[in-house]
Length: 446
Image (tube, rainbow, N blue to C red; front, side, top):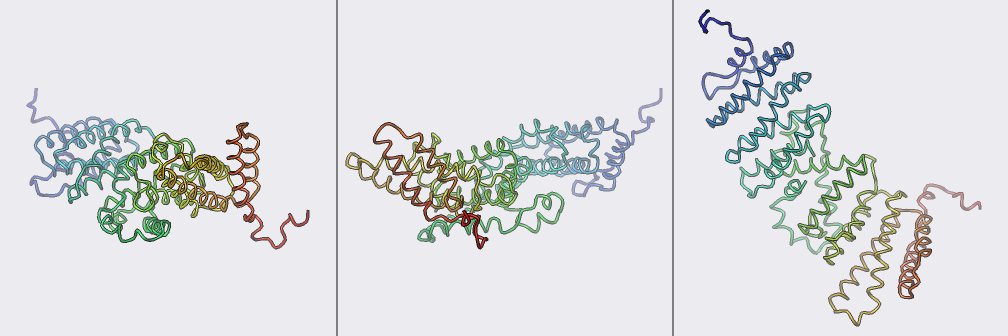
């Protein structure tokens, strides 16, 4: 038997050894990393042994708290992810194990940031949902990281890294960072302005730069040009990706349900101070520009008035209707099943408001004032919705259905007739949007 030192060293071991510099402060040998990637592409059977060595080395450097060495190892993984996509199934499991370990390093923020950045590259180089189950297990850790309390530089970097990883997986951590802490000091200065004028420019500022996911992923300089160091930027990216899910109704319904319930728990529906209006305006703009489910968001917000969280809070009901008014003002004027259904739901709430105002003498002053305000905002919402329906025909059909199902109880039937009468007054001043560009509408010839 020959001595062990006489045995030839495997080439992949030599490549790995040459990547790491002798001095701790030096940079890794990128030329050797490229050679390793070339070796992996030609020798896929060696990949498990290579990743096993990398994983063991990463854990050893973590125990010794060598941040630079861990960065070198993640640099190798990221290069493999980009260059060796055909061999990805051979090293993806090892990579995700390392990421899981890095995200658990709660005492070392730098390790968690490195893990988030590497995870961002991994997800954006996936061609299918093979590893979605593994990624779902990482989302709670990313959310906790993006929700850590504090406003110093260290916390901001953590938030950015967590939100960057979340933006590619597409959640309450996103919304925690959509608002500037500095904006709170200036809120009281603008309270006298109209609520719609006060909020729509805020949404316009958020969307003034079209967030292109392709640019963020492919153009390395894009993240340095934009304010990628701010959690607000990655929060907008997350919202952009959430809105892009609107291609399938069931998926977007689940996303919106979680979003609206978060607004309920945090009491964020106020048009003047809350976060709901600017966020929903942004999402509605993205959904409409993509051409999917044009009025779905507006209809969902109005249906949310019947949620158990909202029914317990009368003031929240008024805030939600005011938000719906603002959304209706900027949505497209187009007849759709969703917008007609939203009008029908608001007529039902109008009937409820009329019923509450029948006997004011029994109620207290506070309830009377609330009901009057609720009635006023519902009336305004019906006007705005009718303008977006554009045609009196669908609204007349809604009124007919309501009259057909009128109750035998005298009080209830009077409330229904009063609600239908008010809807008829609104429809009387409605012009058909189909006739706007026609000098002689066909209806004149009949």
